[in-house]
Length: 188
Image (cartoon, rainbow, N blue to C red; front, top):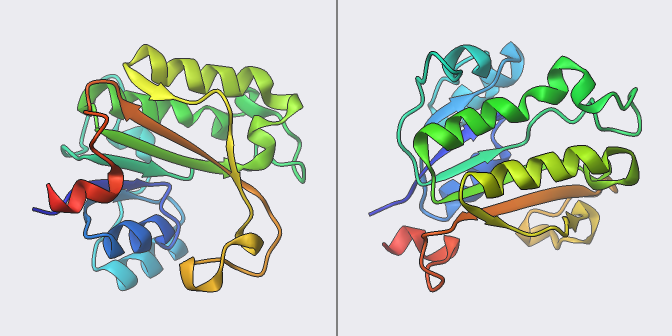
C-alpha cells in the first residue's frame, strides 16, 4: 500500500515529484499562486486548493488524513534578499497554519523547507518557535538545521545549478517505531 502525503505551498510540485517517485500518493495540495497552481494541476492531475488559511484553521479542517505532510512555506519573510520581518509579517506566520493541520491530522512525518536564513542568527527565535511547536505536538525534531545546497546534490538526485542553500526540518511523530523510515513507507 502506498503512503499518502499532502503538499502545502506546493509551487509546481517539487515535493510531489520526489514523494511520488518514492511511491507516495498525494491526497491534497495547496498553492495560492494561480500560475503555479495551473502548472501543478497539469503536471500532477490534481488541482490545488488556493489559500491554505481558508482550508485549515481553528474552525475548518478541509484536509484529508495523510501519512506525510510536506511544505515549503513562504520564504520571503526570512530571506536575506527581503526585509527579514519573519513572523512579524503575515506570510511569516503561515507556519502556524501548518501546525493546525499537524494538530488535527497527526501525520507520521513532516518535511518542511525554507531558506537557510530561517535558521540563521536573525531568526533564531523563529527557529526555536518552529522546533518547540513540533515537539509540543509530540514530534521528534533536531535542534540542528539540515542545510542542503542544490548545487552540491548530484544532478541524477535532483541537484540544480544554483547556490541558494535550503534548510529542511524533518519531524517524526514520537510514537512511530524507530525501525520505520520514510523510505519504507511505500512498503508498509
